[in-house]
Length: 178
Image (tube, helix red, strand yellow):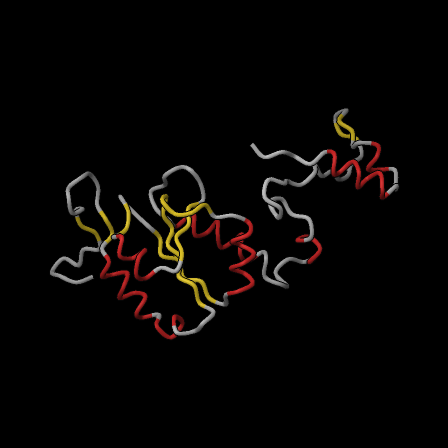
C-alpha cells in the first residue's frame, strides 16, 4: 500500500458505511505475481457476495482448464470495483449470505476444485457419480458396516447382491435439493 500509513482500505466514494479495499494494493500484489499471470493457464478469481454462484461445474472446469488459480479475497464492505472490472477474470460467491471476508470462500472453492484434479482422490471412480454433476441432482444415501446398529438397519436391497435392483433403488432414493 502507498502513503504514510499504508492503508489498504478507505471510505467509499459517494458515502456510506464501511470501508472498501483499495485497488492499488491488489494491483501491486498481482503485478508481483506477473510471471504466473503471463501463463495462459492462470485464473484470477475475486470472492464477493455479489459474484455469480460457485457451482460444481465451475470446480470441474477450473480443475481441468487451469494450472494456477489466484484468489483475491474481498473484505470489509467490499473491494474497489476496478479490481473486478480490470484485474479479476471471474467473481464468485459461495452462497446467499455475507461473510466478513473472502478467505473462507476461497478455501471452499479450492477444496472443490482440487478434488477434481486427477490423482488427488485415492479412487478416481469417486468422481463418476457426484452430487451436483447434473444440476439439481444429488447422490443417493450411503451405508456401511455394521449391517444393523441401534436397531437401524441397512436397506435389504443393498445387501442382496442384485446390481440391477441396487441401481434402481439408488435412482429412486436420490436426495432432492432444497
